[in-house]
Image 1 (spheres, helix red, strand yellow):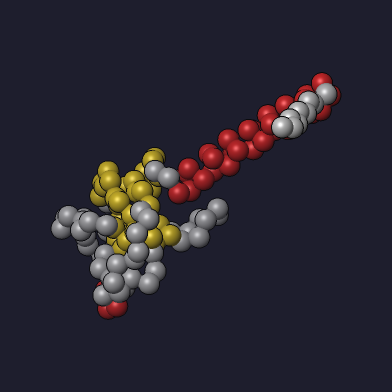
Image 2 (cartoon, rainbow, N blue to C red):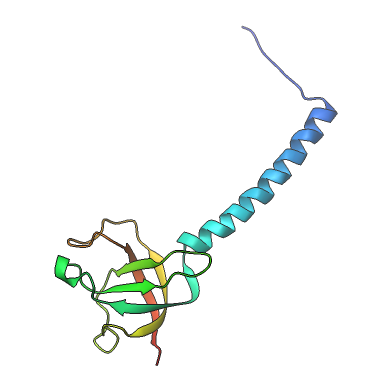
Length: 122
């Protein structure tokens, strides 16, 4: 039998500890960014109901307009929206959660998502 054992010197151990804390800080910042980009999007997104892809077989979509920090986002609601909200051009405030599922038939643009907390604007 043979055993292998290794030890770090105090200097190497403290250098590793410093690296780990930097790594943790970086991971926390990255985690925060990715949560706001792909997790539950709390805080009320504003978008416009659109039927512009209806001719291809894709029903209602919600378009979040582009801004300084992000390009236009097209969201495909998993469930049908209520009739009082599902009107072309209707502005809404809502929350969404992206879903890991294929796009519905006829939809070539957009992200399937669960839509919650819908409120009509105007």
